[in-house]
Amino acid sequence: MRVEIRNHLTDVSSPRTRKLARCAVLAAVAWCSSAAPARALVPGDLCTGNPCVVGTDVVIDADAALDFGVTTDLRFAPGVRVLLQNGSTAAFSAGSIVIGSGARFSSDAPGSSLYFSADATTIEIGVGGAPASFVLRDGVEVGFFAEGDCTVNARADVSGSQQEGGVFYIQSFGDVLFRGNVVADGSRDGQYNAGAVDFDADGSLVVDGKLRARGYGPDSGYVLMRGAEVHLMGGIDVKPKVGYGGTVEVSAAAADVTLDAKIDAGGRRAPDDAGGNNCGGGIIQLMAAQSIALNAKASVRGGGPGGCSGGSFTAQAGANFVWREAGRSGPRRPGSSASAAA
Image (cartoon, rainbow, N blue to C red; front, side, top):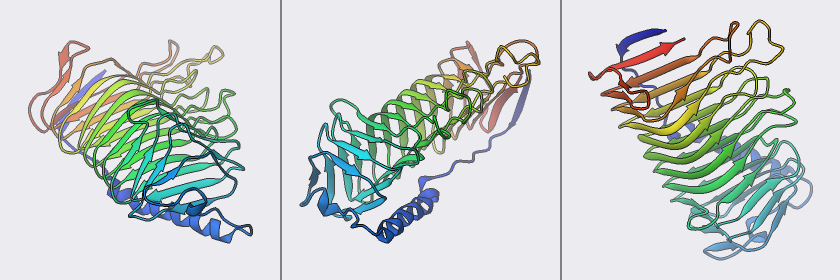
């Protein structure tokens, strides 16, 4: 075990640095939709008025960029079903977006993506009721962007079976509050890697749920959490069935990181891995402009004896680092941090 003291360094990106990439995706979807020989789906096919309420089930069988306008409040009624067919991509944009409790978005073929963009104010999903569902197995991305706050109560599955696990992301220029579960596992036959869960807020980020990106032989995935301040509850699991542990990065650009979530980035040795070559622990990296409070277990343990090495744990805090679960505290002077690699 090696322990170091070094200067505090933050490398925290904002959703503003990623907006151009999101716009490029929406532009590509719009171009593909306009190039299709058949009549493309348009916003008026789903709803009219303001608020514009999607009250009946929808099937989307070709790429569709559905821009309802920056002054429109787009709402999906509770329990509504939206199905993406043939690996299609759908991008919904409006001034604000509300997705009712129990709504379900799903796909029936590999390669689909789903995007929601609130270009004036907020996104609210499953608030005050049952979580909404986003099930795009073998999908590429499920993404949410909000100019204002983003409040999400959801269950999502972007795991891979015929291709690598997908990405589930939230970007907000305001606060993000997420409750629910996200699964971005790799394929169970061991052919494809796990995906990623990526939350990014200019304001506070609060997560109360379970985030999972487990590999089943190939690589486990990534869980990336960024905000001005960050509070995580529940659990993060990037420990594979067999193989190397994944990567967890949590960073607060202006204030504290508080972790009440168990983080497991350990490795796991396969029975036929006699040399312990593919079972090392993963990476946990914590960064905060102010303090870090680690109140739950964090593991980068190797997957067993015979060569399975431990992973890397790093905590960089502008003020205090306290690991209460382990009954210890790290450096307390401003501008310092602790790291360990086994």
